[in-house]
Length: 441
Image (cartoon, rainbow, N blue to C red; front, side):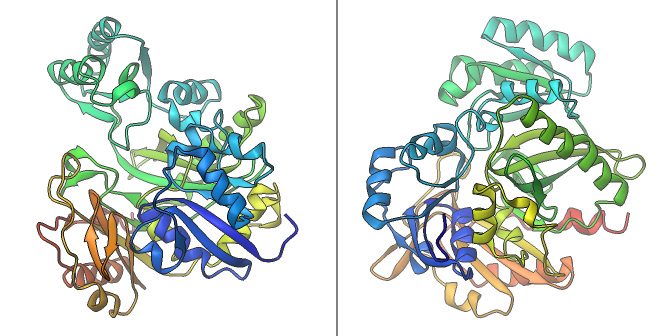
């Protein structure tokens, strides 16, 4: 890649991809921008091709060839896990994504947990169940060891909904029945990880990684459950904020020494290598006394909705970072630089999400919301028809407020939320609250 001006294709259709596309438009290295399949909001910044699906690798390649694309950036996990990089690499197309083997760190919870155990990356004690009868037996063993409860995780991809906290044996038995017999996650739940339930507070660490160097973005915190106060079933994420005020020097040192450094040693020693984005979902126990981070999961892509609060704060050229990662030149950056501000993202969802939800509801008030200073709106599940935006997904819009303090960022995002309307709009009202509670610890 010797160009100084690049044609870039982004794969994906959500709020994360809209944030990526928006950030790419600010790059001095960008020539033109394309997105497959895109959404209503992305169409403002990039040429979208909504007729191609993300698993249609041949059609994606034909589009790349036809439009003379220089770089492909993969947003969601599915194409990476299914081997989009491996497929396009045979045509010498640079792809910002891990390979199929590397993406097993997200695509298989069993693969990930065994990797963590081998390379001394702190994680919850666990067992693996290969079938339903084995799972029933292991549940009793785990509950006899861990009276506080356990977590059951589908081995494969389940759109962020495959981890279920179970406080009783009855709950756990129902969960494995749903996953392994009723197959609510299809093949993803044929095998499961059963692990000790950790208690604490979750944060996300997302980093560029070229196999030799890891460059973390600032810390962020996702809000997974559908209802206020972290109640109800898991979703793909109902909101996020960044940076996280309560990450102390002691905690940061442990994250680097025990997790980031051991991960880097692991990908080198195992020779799986790594190129792209690595996401560490962490649980912090004993935050107020002796904080200890544990890895809950790896993701092999940018988080959603964490990306929507991280990229607005990133001062570096995003496309340049992508190019340096692909070329294994991340060592040229000593560290990333960020605005001295906070960002808060509130997700507006359709009624029924994360289960069956309504679509094709007209969205109004977007112009009024975007007129508010320090507001960004990233589209997730929208389509544009006859110059109107309609809902087309469970998570519809990501409303981002930026401020000098976390409280200011929260207030700004909710002011914008109030301007936007679609029938049966749903959102959490407590995004960022944990950051305020735990601030200055």
